[in-house]
Length: 172
Image (tube, rainbow, N blue to C red; front, side):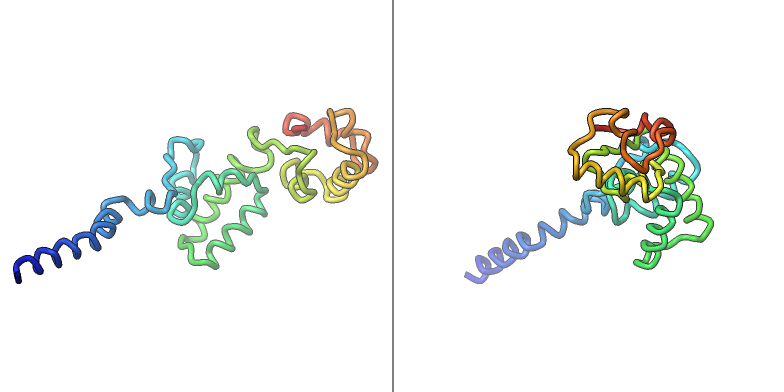
């Protein structure tokens, strides 16, 4: 009887330890769901630092989908350092340069849907002045969605030349 109890205890302990053993067998990044192959990121100085600094806590697609200006990326890096991110000032500056170059508002992949974007998203994504972005949102609220670039150029307070300069990054 004693040996049956012992076997039951060993079996029960094994069932309790199985999830722990499985968790230890999976790399930490995969446990958090943050594994993003670095080859999907554009090449450049700062790529490896970005992966090292950010992927431990974040999915890289969450980071790289933001398309912020240099000051926006700087604010994010400062916030992350306040939350415990480590790295030298030089490393962080390199990460900011990498993000701004490859995932800034000027990057070719950054499109802004002027029919759904907030004014701050328009400022960041299209590098338009705040007043112009506010006018775009107010006009849209009053008159409905934009259909094309000429309609967007009709918004009072928005310079047509500035719209022409960013028209390849505008979606409807």
